[in-house]
Image 1: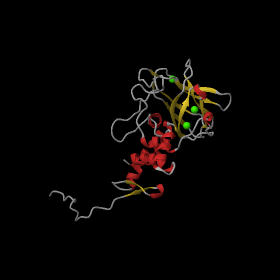
Image 2: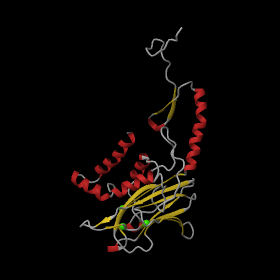
Image 3: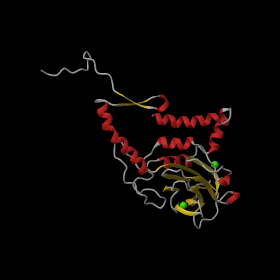
Image 4: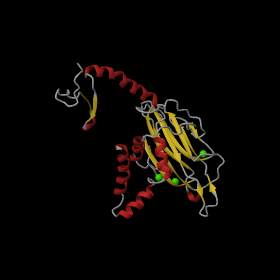
Length: 280
Ligand SMILES: [Ca+2]
Ligand SMILES: [Ca+2]
Ligand SMILES: [Ca+2]
């Protein structure tokens, strides 16, 4: 519930900082793109875990990219991680360079582009530049858009957008893409080379004519899953040591300033009603 409260706080604080009057605030909030279904969908999918070591329920250890839009046929985008998605939303909207955005983009973020596809002067390529950190990082990104239904509700058109990743440290070279012709999301799931420069590009699908449509894009660059597994195993390896040092109960308590401390609960008094006297 804490994550959900934080998630909502991110939304509501965004409403408050835009304008003074409540009505103007709401308009700004919607115009932002933050409340669009495309951005919310992209944020949830880009924040999902492709690997999950759960305390309860089944683990997710066999994620396999096997669809034309780079998802798993069985698990989709993986296991929802609301905290990841909140962090992506909180990192803020970052426009493509064609729409006046600054470069580079952050390691987490999202964009809503209301006009894309080449018609009416809109851009038909949208570029998002970034540099991988010196660590072993992994990019997860989702481009999402809705089907185009005309006002008479008589025709439905699925515009074809694709998502590509170029390495641009030297001569630009495409290193990954998501180019489905039948889905309304495209996804990147890619191990980055430390320190190299990259561009994510939203483009028209091959053979697609011009159109004008809107999309949401969300991304996160985080340590590779394999690195996270090593950290998890490292912590697990330490647990027996802590267990012996601190007697039979260990409670991890997160205090202010984000320090983790280890406590042993006070011994149960002999007068406690919960104390069990052994049978003779
Ligand atoms: Ca935008
Ligand atoms: Ca645009
Ligand atoms: Ca496509």
